[in-house]
Image (spheres, rainbow, N blue to C red):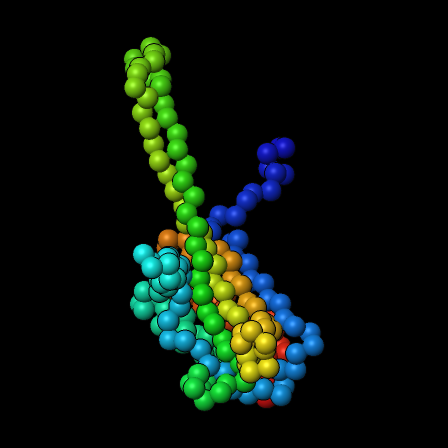
Length: 188
């Protein structure tokens, strides 16, 4: 009877997806209407032999539908996408981060026909799982910045989406939720 009262945990990894948004409260989105966005999504960066950072991009099979979903949400909210050379009001930068956790274990014992024993060397196993997040950042135009970089005025993070299953619908749902909980981005 006590076991029946114990709450169960999540059954699927999608049950623990979370979406967080935050914005600069003093920024007036209603006075803006254009944005620029890259055609690729950065997932990692490494330094080359010369010390310069070289980005690693998400596979276009996954990146293209994600970028299309972001663009659709921006269009639905009244924004117009322009090229970066056309002096956009804001810049929307998508990125993804992932982390792989490894578990190492070993066994020394064995069971055979009613006998328990030990053996050497131990039997090693390795398990892993990957988690990650989709990050979207809207930055103001850098024209008035002393360091030529725009200030982040909106950040949307959809956590738990990169799990190795590559379920693009989970990512799209997270993107939609980020825009749903950000009504200040709606211009019309």
